[in-house]
Amino acid sequence: MGIEAKDFTLDVDLLAFSGIVFSPEQRASLQTSLILLKDQYKFKTIHLWGKILGITEDYFIIQGRQKDELKERQFLYSKDCINWNMLTPADDEAKELTLLCSGRFTGDPSHEFEVTKYSITNENTEEENVEENKSQLREEDRLAATLWKIEQDALIIPRGSYVLQPNGDVERNRTFEGLTVAESGKLPNYFHFREPIHLQQKSLIHRSALDKSLHFLDTIDEDIPKGWSVQYERGSGLVQIRSLKWLGMAFFHVPETNRFGSLYCGVGEENKDLPFMI
Image (cartoon, rainbow, N blue to C red):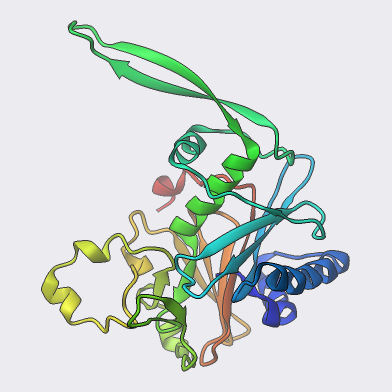
């Protein structure tokens, strides 16, 4: 989801509950960049997506979206919040190598990581041979693949906040007035904001009972293992949901209003210990 340009200042303040803070200089530069980039690239909406922490420098991430907000997304990154580079979407090889890649991001987009892939061969013999293949992965490609994976696993929206139009476009629901306080604390009321995976596996009877314009995504309560922490802040005036799989991904919603958003601020590495934490 990210933080939309028009709500930038207030939403950044709300996410301070999760420990995500930006300096006054960064906030000013980011706010200006959001306005300029939206106009330059003719995005329908533009959002501050987050920050990947590198060893020498950090990557600030902005995401622009076109009419279909589910499928038409584009990432840009910057190290100074002023100069921005378009990020080419990751290909399948980069996604595969990124899963095998370890170690922090350096902050240099041209840095190359050496990734070792192991494959088992059994060529007409009873013995299995393990082959070791070394590949190079550019940090910029790893960044694109990591952002894609975080979105797959941990980008969420409240139920009813987006609608599936008859032409197939997914757009913000202008009539969304927020979840109630009681609803906002329950995981079934939140969707993964990516192409559905589990919904397609449901029975036809189950799917026919759903309102297809509103319930067209996977709910996050079906994740295995379950990887979410829900907390109320300011009494019950703010709900925070944090991903335990991608530590640093924080979502917020102000119940009974249309205000919600999320921000990632972390090292860009998946929490492999999650199955043992549950």
